[in-house]
Length: 195
Image (cartoon, rainbow, N blue to C red):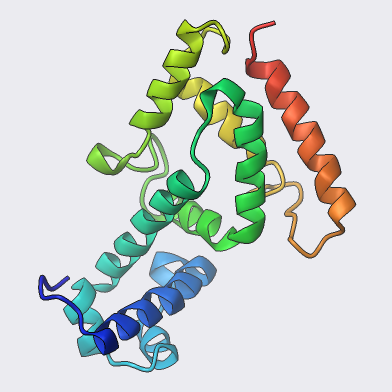
């Protein structure tokens, strides 16, 4: 991306590209997404997109890293209540299923094994530190903090767009979501809390 500050009009174009590209990548993946569709829907051109992001892959990276930051910021971990954190993650997946689909495409097309993101962009350190502190305080069971975090996240995704059993939507009745939230909360609480 260019280091020049964006004008108001440029910022609006930049945001339209991000919004449209998020939908495109979530629907079609990295390989299947088409720059032509993105620029047409964003009412811009390829030159502008490439000036901002350098390449289609650069655009995807910007969107994906932003989605990871969004999850961390919108649903910050509370290691003293991992069950509540799991429920808040469930709710975020209902609000933004596209973010989970982006992570799924990364897993399918880029990183089939190991960490989803390597290096300084992992964003796990704060979560792992919080779990470690909760373990030291006797609130969370012993075990590898990463494994505990991964298990809680996996449990929160039981009805997400990556479920191979059932994908929930925000349009389902509220009582269905309440029932799932209660089951998720109790299951995570029993799995990770020191008795």
